[in-house]
Length: 359
Image (cartoon, rainbow, N blue to C red; front, side, top):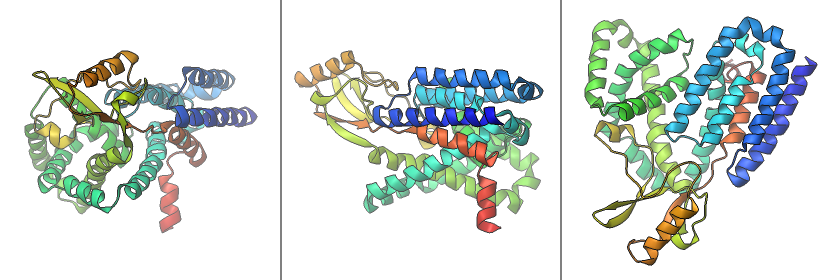
């Protein structure tokens, strides 16, 4: 018990340091992650007897956390430093959680991303103003888009839930995240016409799984999940783009800045376009990834890229003199919040919140 208390205190202390550095500089140092792993190695060695019976659960949690962390990084949802921190924290969960929780990975995802979502949802909404909020809502709930999302949920949910149930993951939050990842994988691996795929899967489900589909116990959660997906993926991300970016003069660009607009060249003409993950609507209509004259990695602009952009501006080849850059998002703080909520609640905080609100 004493070693676990010291272990958690050490993680808390390093978590404060990492969160402050991430907030101020937008960087998670590898040395901090190495220090966390040193503490875990010592803790693992001392408590090997507790980990040994849960070897299968531990390895499953490790593989899934690596797969999800890397996938979200590849799809641009967070920088590589946050992906590595997420994997490390998932691995560092005490062995008691491997016993009490059916899905530690799902629990830490919920405990980290739900507070993150609500924090940025309300802060971004308040900063954006009524007109911008109305425009984003109108865009998000375009009727054709809602129909396409409903079809994709009906068809893809059936296919996705089969492996999720086998892995013991059944939370809506995990499903929404995995639905988004699956859509991105289909788009990037093969340029399929996803409309046909989703419609075909939906028809098959109506034929073979009709008892579930026509049950209110399925319809109501389906409507809620689709609503959450649309609000997050289309309304919130669109609103967050304007609320978490700022215009910077091309002459004032600095190394490490992450562009929110990309510069493209076509037939000798240059223009800037928003860098935002392709929406499902765009994917279903053959959207293509832009080819920028600079990188869009999480390390930000390099000295060479800045010189190239400023050189084009100086020679008056660009029709603009400023560009949007991303404000830093301190994911680290919320990842540590998710870790400690998972430890304190012995899993997801949702059952506790449900009990608190509804008895």
